[in-house]
Every structure is written in C-alpha cells, then in structure tokens.
Image (spheres, each protein chain N blue to C red):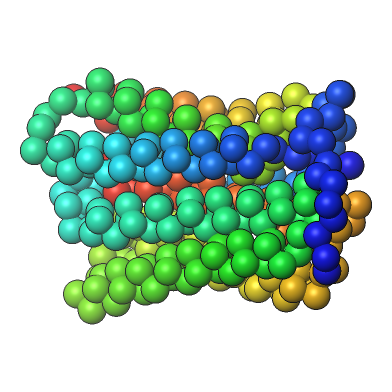
Length: 200
Length: 93
C-alpha cells in the first residue's frame, strides 16, 4: 500500500475514551496481569520465609542472560510500538511490516536465550521438586515463556497482515490489540527480571 | 481515531528503558558482594516502576487515554511492587 502524504495529528483534543485495540483484549490483558500479580506475590512471600535459600539459589542463575533477555523484549516492544505508529500516523504498511519483523526477531532472540538457560538448568538435574526457589523459577519463567510463544504467533500474523496492507489508520484494531498483548508480555518480564534475578 | 504517541516519545522511552535495564543489571552484579539492603532495594523498585510506567504510557499508548485505563494498569504495577516491598521488609533480619 502506498503511504499517504498527509500525516495524522499526534494528539487529540480530548482524551480517547477507550485504549487502543479491541476492548476485549484489554479485559484479557487485565486477567493475565492479575494472574502474574498472584504469581509474583507468591514468589515474594515464599522468599520472605526463606531468604537464605532464595539468595543462594539465585547465584546459580545466569543474570547476564536475564538482562540480555530484558533488552531483547524491550527492543521488540519498541519495534512493535513503532510499527503501530507507522500505520496509525502515516498509513505506511511497508515500514510497519519491517518494524514488526524487528519485533519478531527480538522475541525469537528471547526464546533462544531462555532455551539455553533451561537446557543448563535441566542438564544439571534440576526439577520443579528440587527446592522452593526452583519450583517458582521454573513455573514462573515457563508460564511467561508460553506467553512469549503466543505473542510471537500473534506478531507473525500481524506481520503477514501488515505486509498485505490490511491495516489503515481507520482500521488498525487488530494490529493495536496484538501490539497491546505483546507489550503486556514485556511489562511482566520487566517485573520478573529484578524480582527473580536481582533482588537479594 | 486511535491514540497516537509521537515517535520521539516512543524512542525516548526506549532509550530510558535500555539505560534503566543496564542500571538494573549493574545493581545485580554489585549487590552480590555487598550487604546493603534497603537503599538498593528502594532504587531497584523505583527503576522497575519507571520502566513499567514507560511501557504502559508510551508503548501500550495509554498516555492519551482516559485516566481510568491508565490508572488500572499503573495501579497493577504499584500493587505488585508494593507487595514485593512488603514481603522484602518481612524478610529482613
């Protein structure tokens, strides 16, 4: 699709009533955030009961991998936000599809690093029943890992649709909904990284 | 019409997010060998809240949306970080 020559204004006079995308995706996002909140609180209070174990086990994690994964997810989110911007402001599907491809690459990088981490953990014979820390580490990060995989599927569909020029400034609900889901996955990791890898 | 966040705001948010992530990474390395608890934890949680807020406002594009929606998601971040702080305080010797 050919980009329009006139860019749309960046701020409306009155605040928008609803967030970008379908309202249904926001209820889904809020439900997901609630589930992660319960998980995070459970981890934090379990740690409070046995901080020495959690601190000792945390030393066995690869913090560099966790930080690299944070940078990858943030970069992927930035790419997706710029992709949405390219459509809703400039109606430039070609540019948007390139940004979305960047987002997919960031997500793929995250999955590769996480798989290396899991292979190290499981290769050392660690399981869910090794101790409380690893029960939380494996279940919490794997729950998030599954969300990244779903996010990658969504981004791939959005990329294919965007390449076909199916989204326009007046019809970008699907793109904005998928992008909001991806940002939720990023948001959750932003809390998970300091909680599990850094806090002592 | 969809709410539009200016590109420069999205880019600025990204730059701050990268810097805050590197700071979190460095705090993690430093913290392994130092027994300073509350000030570092306070800094870590502040950095995390700043990062959450940027993602919510500029990436999720909730900045130009009615406060109700921003408030729910930012409230989620405050609630989670508040519970983590409470659990951390309980764990202190």
